Length: 101
Image (cartoon, rainbow, N blue to C red):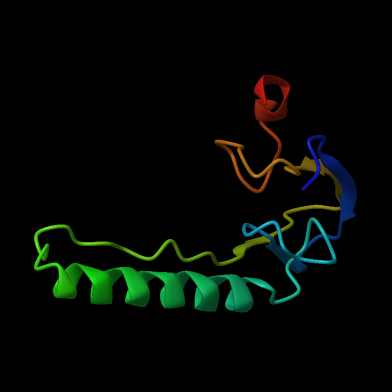
């Protein structure tokens, strides 16, 4: 994961998939790595739920933290800063949140 934004040129009308999971090898864009991340999270949740059932602590429900790319399209040919730290409150665009990490 990169703390600084990725400066990229977007093409008008083209769709893009911004990586949210931080595992993509083609940052800042998605390469499908989130499917592996989601599977790991689902396996962890299943194990925690089994432990919960064994200990009869069924009041504590656990939800999987699934990741998926943010799909967006460019309204015009332009250069933008896409978030690299994955903390932007304006994803996929950089909000400057990396300054506080």
